[in-house]
Image 1 (cartoon, one colour):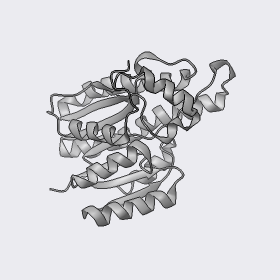
Image 2: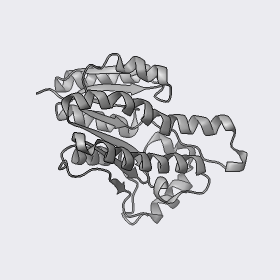
Image 3: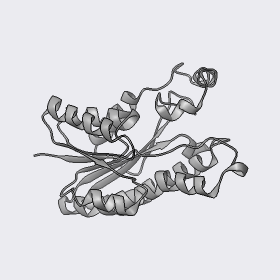
Amino acid sequence: MSKYALITGASRGIGKAIADIMAADGYNLYLSCIHSKNELCSYASELSEQYGISCTPFIGDMGCEDDVKKMFDTIPELDVLINNAGLSYVGLLSEMSTKDWQRIMSANLDSLFYTCRLAIPLMLHKHNGKIINISSVWGNIGASMEVAYSASKGAVNSFTKALAKELAPSHIQVNAIACGVIDTDMNSCFSAEEMEALREEIPCDRIGQPSEAAQMVRNLLNAPDYLTGQIITLDGGWT
């Protein structure tokens, strides 16, 4: 039986790696991003041709209710939702603008509300489904100079635990992966020296790869249904 999955923020980094591994496993995909239209459409065609699955790209802001509604108008059924879209912000809270605060909360938290609210009825129809939220270790312990990002990911973790309890009777599992330092464009704000300092703090002595986060998603998709409401840390032993 065909299975359908939505992956947000799928044009690069972790989302792109998740799309590849799920396409290889035979999932038909809906992929979203906000800016990289050409890259996403090209990647969708590549996955479709390579793996023989349907792959539909959508360009829109997952923190915008109208954009999410438009996307779900094209999704008649859904088995898996991967909430990966998100933004970071590095800087002093005292110097952060209200606009930047709202932008981070919209991209990292509001997006989960909009996508989950529309995905749940499709999963309830099947009496089955999986929701996986990509979070961060900063949501667990917080980070100086990343207060807004930490707060948004802490909320993602609480959202995950609460929604898991709400949906467990309907056989829908909700879990999150709290990533450490992963080699993605989100870290481009850091210098080579800063990235090296981070690497030295990590017991595994290296930065994580998007493919490893994708493998953890695959593990959760294949995990027993009894596994729900968990925030799984993937950080090389760092925190």
